[in-house]
Amino acid sequence: MPSLDSGRTKRSANRRARRESIRHLSRTALYLALALTVHALENAILPPLPIPGVRLGLANMVILTVLYTEGFKTAFLISISRVFLGSFFSGTFLGIAFWPTLAGAVTSTLTMAAVRLFSQSKVSPVGVSVMGALAHNISQLAAIYPFFPNAGLLYYLPFLFLLAVPAGLLTGIVGRKIIVALDATRT
Image (cartoon, rainbow, N blue to C red; front, top):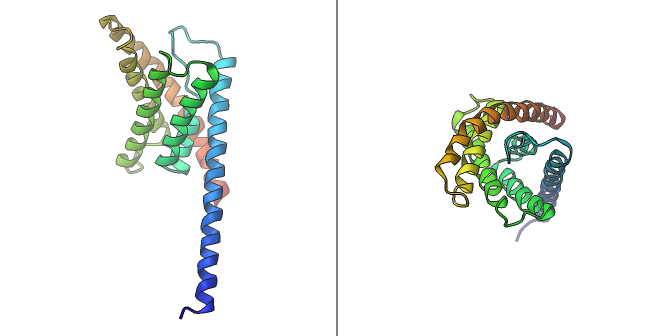
């Protein structure tokens, strides 16, 4: 027959697990709201860059932060959710612009997670962000090609790379500062 103390211990452990689950869900919802807000503000406030379809990708600093603070699964969930909800709210859901955005989000998140995992902390969040930005641009170009199958589209790639590096640096530097600040508050 189990003792009374073991029953209390199990209930206490279950309560702690539920509380942590609720905290994690709350943080995930806040990060998603932040990513959507940054994405919307970037589209509304910043002037478009001279190359069509190119943006700074400021919402990526949120994904980078989540990757470092919450892990890959949460970062991937937020990245994909931001694309679906952002495109739904902007009226581009399942349109031509949706597919390159989705491809970029998936590829950049997977790339950042892989670089972080396989570099074993030898690559900083800034480097991880730059790699994510480069992967994002490559996959966006690959995703748009079926809609506009033209070899001339490949001439676009060097310009995308030239813009990906500073955008990745910017989001990486800001993301790194956020990660450090969050780590400081957790200890």
